[in-house]
Length: 438
Figure 1 (cartoon, rainbow, N blue to C red):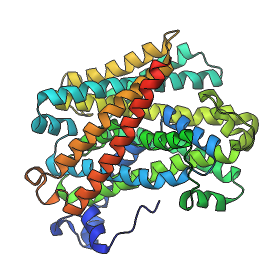
Figure 2 (cartoon, rainbow, N blue to C red; figure 1 turned 60 degrees about the horizontal axis):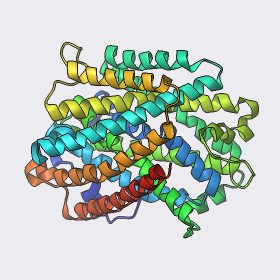
Figure 3 (cartoon, rainbow, N blue to C red; figure 1 turned 90 degrees about the vertical axis):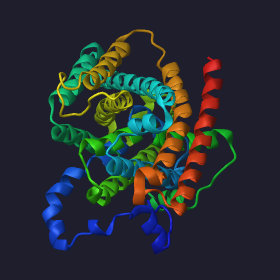
């Protein structure tokens, strides 16, 4: 995903603010390779967790309805995503503090309480949606969801509460591998890759309101507040120093590139298999149709594997991001290596998110569409606040020193914030209309 062209100086300013003492000789770098391996991971986990059930549905709908014509949107939204994640990585490494912690210290308790309350509600809604996704998967393979949902909930809880940070990260990375299904499926399904290329570089943009809303929904789906909270807290959890900044930044950027490449392949797969072929796409249950032309009768099972892994990853990351944000805001002990006795609030919040998600997903008659619309509404209001806070904090010379945003970077970052905020507020307005019309 070639993001944009910079002069050598501009590119260095944007992504290579590493002090001269951090530039090691090849021999010292070889000695650091085991340490570098421990840094890699949070970037991919944070970015991939956005490709959860509702994200897969959005990407699949875009491909099924508009073919390859929306692929161009991945270029600006990848750029925006990279900027947001890079700033949070830099803040986490330089300050040694999580995002909620910094917001509390620099913007006050009341503002922090508002942000955290919105984040908890939004994340809880998405967690519930992931358990609903697990229920759908269980039905596809013939397992009662009343059995599958509690078991999966317990497995996720046990993995995080009882596992070591290294094991947890390895499990999350393993879950990320399920998205390779979409890449393999696309290579089986696409006949003319030149059409795919044209979708990226020569889009046929229309003024149709449904088309424009789908573009906005794609960009809005890609960047959500929990990803920024999670990746910054992960940097702090790992205890990284300024000497690790270049590797941590590379991890974040590569994670975004990989996650958005997979998201693009979801669009490509849906476009190749459903667009213009009379195959309707109206709800989540239509998603297995994207695999039907490729794997035939095994399509529901292939889809089930992909959705299962995506939901499992999000079910782990979202409660953790929530636990980090609340604990940081209130000054509680936190950390994946902590026990319940050492960090009762942190692990208690994580546990509560899992339990509530399981219970609500099992309740009959719950209006999940309304719940997801409300979640989208809250995220839409929260994202401009989070992004503005990130840019302000990462631009502070007092806080960041020589690693603060430069003049050129600030222009790009504030432009990104204005565009994403406008998109988010548009989605809020659209959500209000949809909720009021129900």
